[in-house]
Length: 185
Image (tube, rainbow, N blue to C red; front, side, top):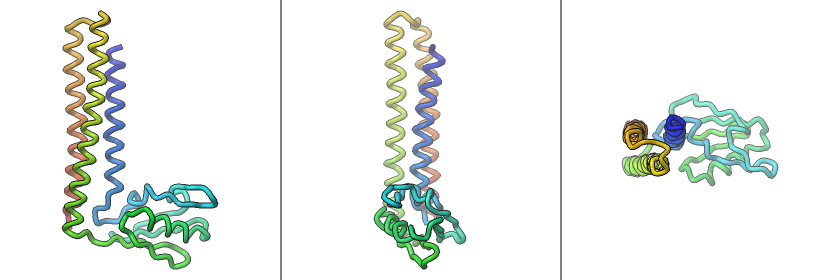
C-alpha cells in the first residue's frame, strides 16, 4: 500500500516534468524545430486539427521550417493558423509549400524568454511540491487511522522528500538547459 502511494507520486511528478519538457520544447530559441508549431491548430474542412496531422514539416536549414501539406487546398488555412498563433513567425506560401523563416532573437527577446522559462519551471516546481503535500497528507491520514506506525510514517516521509528533491532538480535542470539554449547566439 505504501509502495503504491510512492509509485503514484512518482508517476504524477514524472508527468509534471514531462509536461514541462514539452512546454519548453515549443519555446523558440533561435533555431528551427517542428515543436515550435506543436500548438498550432488549423481549421480544416470545418474541424480544428493540429498542424502535424495535415502536413509534413522539415528543417533544411537551422533557421527554416518547410511545411508541405498533404492537401494543397489547406495551404491558406495553415498559413492563417500560424499567423494567428502569435508565435512571431511570418509564413511564406509559394503555392506548394509554406516556408517559415525563424528570425534571430534580439537580446531583449532573449531576456523575456529566459524570464518566461523561469516562470514555467517555477510553476512545475510548485506542482511537484503540491503532489508531495498530497502524499504527505495521505500518509498522515493512514497513521492517524492506525494503518501505519509512526516509524513507517517517518521512513516514507523521508522517501517522499527524496523523490520530490529529485524531480525538482530535474525540472530545474530542464529550465537551465533551455535558458542556456536561448542565450546562445
